[in-house]
Image (cartoon, rainbow, N blue to C red; front, side):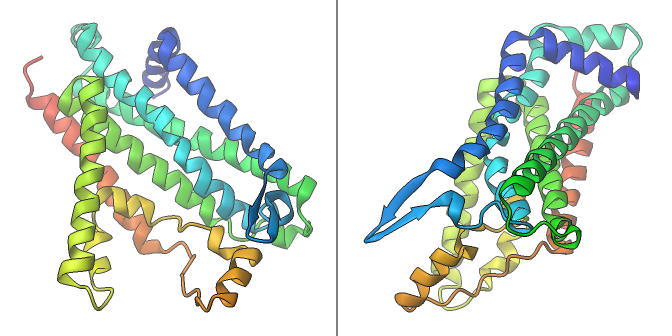
Amino acid sequence: MKRLISIELQKIWKNRASRILTLTYFILITFITLLVAIKFDVGPIQINIGEQGVFNFPFIWHFNTYFVAILKFFLAVVIVSMMANEYSYGTLKQNLIDGMSKKEFIQSKFLTVLLFSAVSTLFVFIVSLILGLIYSSYTEVGIIFSQMEYLLAYFVKLLGFFSFCLFLGVFVKRSAFALGFLLFWNIIEGITIGILNFKIFPDNDNDRYFTQFLPLESMSNLIVEPVSRLSVIKSIGTQVGIENTKDYSVHWYTIAIVLAWTAIFIFSSYKIIKKRDL
């Protein structure tokens, strides 16, 4: 296992573009600290992000994991390129000639995806913990380490998304086309959700029973947007007569759905590599 990960990390680090994208991703995560200085006006009300409790425990776990997850596309490019380069540079064929089995090859890719997800989660945990200890109004141990399920959801979300990117890299072979297919699939899911919501089930929420099983939508459902939890947003909603009925919890079945898709993507990647004439 250590040997397989070492091989993949060397490939990524020796690729200048992948190295820059990976470093940029982790650098951008630290820019969360700049949110303290953001101010904007909503009518006569001036809102200072840093004063709205976004860095309070345990809300910070929800807030940070949701917004940092947007940056996952940086590592998505790295993962897709990682697979595409295997075809372009012939390293896949060379690895097989050198004695690596096709199963070990997919294992090495999945272990890299797993490592990226784990390191990113750990990094978000450390940054959030530091920010919370500095700015949070609540520093009791019980409060600090409550609602940690958002970190688990963040990890599973990255694992599923990166596994999807790996599958696309295996299936399409070219990074540009794989990323284009990712965008195309996102549009397809959006159209499907729109048809179910506005055409088939316009008077109820039954569309969610179907859309929750779409791959990208299932990943999105892991962490519900946290902005509407802010007191100032709730206050504005109350003033205009909008009731907030959102469920912000992390549910076991959303995690199970994404883990199932992860297994499907990895297994499908292996089957493609196994059958493909390399």
